[in-house]
Figure 1 (cartoon, rainbow, N blue to C red):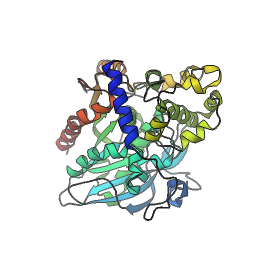
Figure 2: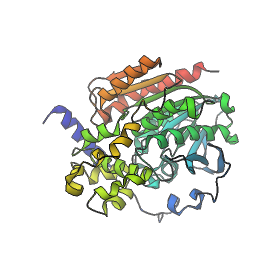
Figure 3: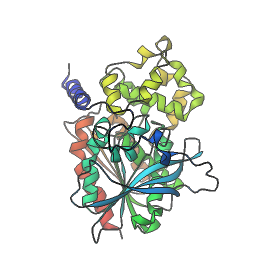
Length: 400
């Protein structure tokens, strides 16, 4: 067994073994009701005439698990965005403002990895619910980076960028809902920002890198009014089809199942669930967060669960959709970009990012690209995030 595989195994099972299962309801005293049982999350009867990023409701909240040096104020904001097909819906964001005098009126859009289909796994709930909920998702690993941005004085928006249906792996949802989350923060008066004059930086790793990078690509056409000064994305899965191939049957193979069913939600006409033999697999996956999925389906090839052993992401129709969802196909970033990758990434496929960077540079995009020696997907986040955060901060601090 190669050293790279050993690193992958150690990383995957260190994560899985360290996380507890997430409660299904809200019986614990003080734990807020899950989104499915919380009327605040209910879709409005009509969104006719609503603008993308429009705030339709808000409430103050108390953050849990984010250790900042200074006090902060936080709100849950319900805002308008859209699904893959352009149909309007409302999703959620958490807007967090340092409660200190003289904090800069600058905004960071922070995208944690979600990679799951249950709304309990989204940051708007995780940031309120606390342990053990935070232990079931990426938020426990991401909160240090989130706290770093807050400690530097920036207002931060953390959106449920997969939307209320958690259409994981559907790139347009990830990018549009991120951009509309930024609009919502700018539209939210208690945040005290300067509207579209506000300098905005974006940051995300792994699944969060998808929301970040796709938002950067879509911004010029979808949200040209935003003053985006730079976007930093690490461990970016540029092509979910290729990522699925290299994860399949390995320690991170469970992600393939959540990605398949996430695409099924976004593109029901593909009838992806019919490719699987067990009708109970979809509800099982849909009730887990990412760390639970990893520990439940390690080393499980998707073909072991499909009709006639078919590769579900390779059937006609699905491949055509995946081709439209690759990084680089949404548009051209109109602000500087910082990308960082492991030199060997068993999820995101570093050669794909190499090719994306070359393509961007041919298009004239200002790209800073860093590959971190001796790392794989998990370790590259901790190794590469400090420099990426510094880069975003430098762009924000230089902006008026």
